[in-house]
Amino acid sequence: MFLPVLFALSFLFSSSNAADFCVGDLNAPQGHAGYSCKKAEAITVNDFVYSGLAATGNTSNRIKAAVTPAFSSQFPRAGFISSDNAVYVKTLGKGDGMVFPQGLLHFQINGGGTPAFALASFSCPSPGIQILDYALFANDIPIDIIRQTTFPDAAQIKKLKKVLGGTG
Image (cartoon, rainbow, N blue to C red; front, top):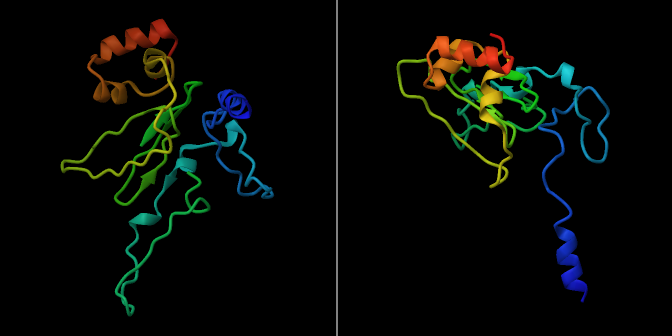
């Protein structure tokens, strides 16, 4: 009797967060559950980008190896659009990394003339959902980025932005 009740109750709880993402406020005191979240107005794209992997490690040691850490305190930080249509975009360099919050629309553009390397890691097999039309056209993402990542031409993108209330 106890196991069926426990099984039924397990469906009442979700392992996902209520917010799109939480950028830890490293200036606030750390509690038992970690850092509190920054206010949305204080979050920038740099909170999702880490450039520390671009530096060459010192391998002039006994084992000829170096470790470049990217822990949460160094990596509190291409581009993505939050569910309230805020755009976070950044030009990444060699060795840079970026976190895309689970379930949010994201994009990458290889602006160079050579192949690019990407490494992806997922925290959940079932991401959230967004309505693509509103995410792409009801915000201030530049028309040129949308043109490069979708099929409509610039004139059609301007029309869609006008209909859905976007700018840019």
